[in-house]
Amino acid sequence: MMNSSKKSIFLFETIKIQNGNVLNLDFHIKRAQNSVLNELKFDFAKILKLKSDGIYRAKVIYNQNGELVSVEYFPYKMRDFYEFKLINISFSYDKKYLDRSNIDEAKNGFDEIIMMKNSLITDTSIANLAIFDESLGLWLTPKTPLLKGTSRQRLLQNGFLTPKDISKNELLNAKKIALMNAMIGFVELDKFKII
Image (cartoon, rainbow, N blue to C red):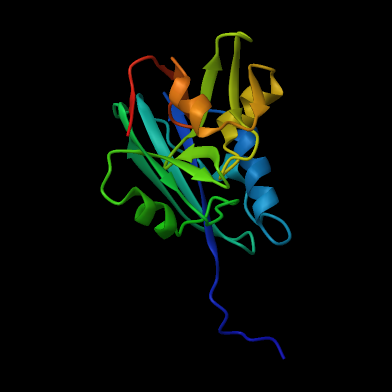
């Protein structure tokens, strides 16, 4: 007999809407389809209805059965990134789970963190990461990120990023790093501090 009291697992997508245009929706749909048990029971294109000027963050919450739970919209302004605390972690976050308690606990009050798992660089708390390898002239992104972000997938697909295992020393020696997620796109940081 199946346990009907099993707690549902909730997931979400953060989608950028700029002047009424939904950006990179195909990548969000693909990740959501790969995150549910069977199939999505809603159409992203039909549920995203915001037509306002400006930049908005749509938060689409759904459960592991592919059922829509809610859609919320928030005006968006990018925050500044400068200082990152390097943190060792052991947990997984391979799907965009609504429960981010492990990430929040790792962040522990720091402005932002860069997480390391199995001695390799993964992600920040809200974005995938890349470092610029001057000798190769390439932007490198962790081969095994904590979460395969939609911007990372898009930039890998178009050949802008190269996947590679990135060590702590490679990160610390990088003169340029970049953050990427659905809201900020790809943002180079030439001034940053890793503590």
